Image (cartoon, rainbow, N blue to C red; front, side, top):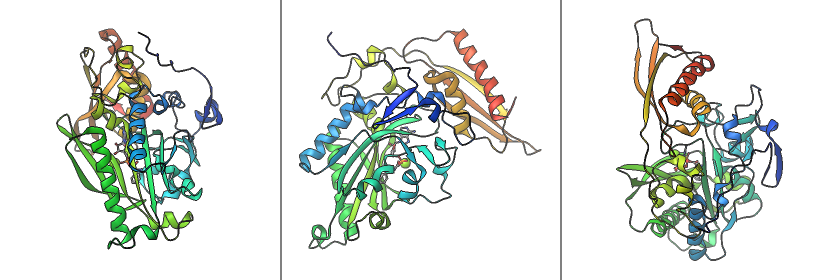
Length: 387
Ligand code: FA5
Ligand code: MG
């Protein structure tokens, strides 16, 4: 067929990100203020959201279409802002408290003590407000240390939306400005969900974000489970004030594009977005929203359990990072299946690792080697005692 093939990732040590040249040594360093592994560096600059024939890019364009139809020429669009941002942009500017867990080295990738790989597209809210934008959409790759399963991946894509209202808009509505913005927000996002999915089961959940109040999450029913697809709310007044919008109110949302694309295209596993296997890539083309993915035969998973005594510094995110560093996308899920504390106060965890390639069957030897390496590295890097 004449279908355009996706570029293989380029093994380059200098990247251009949002117009800025960045060397690998600046991002991955053996330095206590840096926790970015090679596997994450290799994802920088891939920009799946800018490929018009990739499900993430097709979805981005579909969402653009919704906003362009309903608010002609209103929303300014950004999809090439540099993912390397300051701690100030990622956290302070959106009022994330100094002691919030999301700031920890356990949750966020730090390039150095003042610079991170953005963990959400909200990192760009303040600068864009300051530059005078009142309606904008920001799409980009975001990075988080996280658990491993079919809906979590350490690199994923978000789209941020912000809409600012000036007093003339809500005056005369009979509503206070916050209620006006909250109603408009829910209406806009429900409209978006209908535009993307037609009929789908969804529900609003009350939530908490440091940068919005009130805050909500939207969940969609998918594969017999409720799946969280976005967070949103009415922007904290302080953010508007600090950025030149004294008399306004605003709403903001952050969509998880992989989660929406999984529902839209029926994609069962989040790792598939990164495959270059033609049996996947050839099923999607520009402008074709919601074509259902036909799975190629699923290869059998192989389960390996491992038990160890943990120490005070043990975290599941650290464990997952070690496992991903060795097995890459061959690991499908890591789950805690047993947890107990003995009389001496020592705590033991047993994790089950599911290995499965989406492209081929794995040999016993290959899996045994992976597991052997995992055991060795977990013991060495996490200082735990294997049982
Ligand atoms: C945020 O990131 C907020 N910045 C969203 C927001 C923006 C709220 C503006 C209010 C105003 P949260 O951490 O819940 O929120 O992530 C947003 C979405 O990203 C989630 O609903 C989910 O769809 C997706 N997501 C989160 N973690 C992962 C992950 N590890 N893999 C894939 N998708 C994820
Ligand atoms: Mg959330």
